[in-house]
Length: 260
Image 1 (cartoon, rainbow, N blue to C red):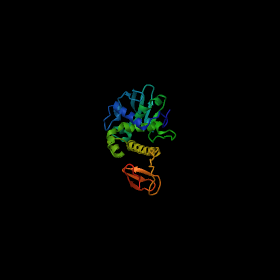
Image 2 (image 1 turned 90 degrees about the horizontal axis):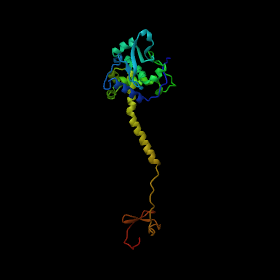
Image 3 (image 1 turned 45 degrees about the vertical axis):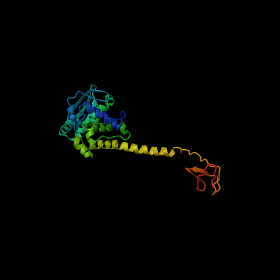
Image 4 (image 1 turned 30 degrees about the vertical axis):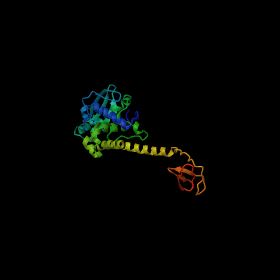
């Protein structure tokens, strides 16, 4: 069975990127600024989230894949990534779209083994895949493969020092679309701590506003009435007395003396 997209096990974007980094490490690409997906042509196995599995990157005649740039299937014994010769030639020449197409299909191979073993065929359409709106991104095979492909080709440490998708595209040799996908993810990552700090500040202010006010101990008034207003509202303040009712301040007298 073949369709443009499938519901797959849910993965958040950062989880997909971490899986791509795992494959980079498995292939010895961890620190490479520019990688060559065609170097997998002689490979016989590939890291997947289910462990290493038999694998083949296979060329197909252009006529056989006239409407597709790439296709990932499971033939009963191995994961098979097929690309037409035109894509292979363009990738060899450094074309960003062709390089990303192979990385995209490697995303399907690494992430979606369960679906492939059930008979799914995961193509990359030459005219672009139709993505049903009812499939959420975190469950979309195509969305996950796009995120994976960008993270596989792009050195995270290097790209985070660059200031635009255009710079990333040139540095990593990927399509501008792939570079934009990656750049948007990086911007979200960088903004997340700031947003979290803002949310925390709002929460702290709300808790402070709702917290019960500390109780104030009642003032102990003297038995003597205020000679100014006559109310019994005198209390000691330092070495003097003050009337809470009229704010009159009196000197403190010696023991036994009254307040005048």
